[in-house]
Image 1: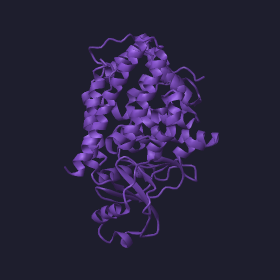
Image 2: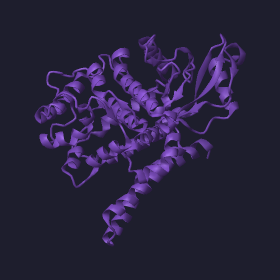
Image 3: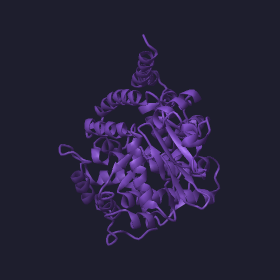
Image 4: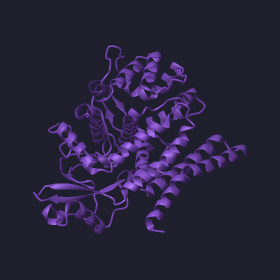
Length: 444
């Protein structure tokens, strides 16, 4: 048996082992509860062991599994501190790190993609040590033939089959999870996810997305998107962006740095779809840095959602009626957009109660996103003793909102890690289409 099939089998075994391991721990937990141990203690142990296995397995894999791991690492802000603390360093590293390719393999890819004389005719100085590494490729710093500093993004050989294999296995896990949630239609969501992630394998397509963002934000006072110099299916060369990585600000930034970074980050998430007609759909901190002149440098345009009309006006409309306290209008709007399937009954008042913690920041002129707030929201929706728990089980995720949901859920997680205070109401009213200021209560 060749090494490739052996590795594929090992990857599949690890992924399939995730739900099986959880089921085993659940059974043990039930046994301990029957034996008289407090339910809260058993639940905490179960969460801790599940988190440990989940991040351990996903952290060893690239491709689709590592992408899921990156998304989960963004959301560690929602985990109880006693669970999140031991893994925070590991999870932050997962956002922008992976085992690097050997230099000889890197050179072989560059020769195949840019020609055998790539070193000297195109890149006159190339650093063999990667500056960053992620799920399907790694980035090297180099000097272009005209003297400018560039970032060279190189795809791992075999990343395509690995990504698609991981997604196939993860879709099986997702379908299993879907059987527990009566309102969720998992298949179209997973189909959309697989289609979008498959596009990330083509760096030529990514380059076209990056060029569109660069055109839209050229000369902008707050956002910097590097220009693309050359691209092939597996290599992308673009201008290098100097600056402080968002992950470093999360780890050790001053409060002023946190406030500035959080405001820049949130405003970009809101402005991007309206300016570029595209949604940057990979919100983890490794893709952003604050430049010396105070702009937000944005990288990695592999995951993009095409929004020819910008963000859906329904988002602003639904937020407006929710802030106004109109439970019936919220329910009708969510049903119209496909978040509540036709056969599912949801009590409007219970639904608005379920949504209240999510929209509470918008009641304020300024809001400080924090891990404490994120954990309180998670506790509100995950407590099976509350009616809101059953409400959440009844909601569906329409495929057309998949990447929007991913961006906002992940983006809020990043904001809670940054811990900055942002002018939330001003930004939302200025940039989110569909907001109806005539019915909005004044901010607190």
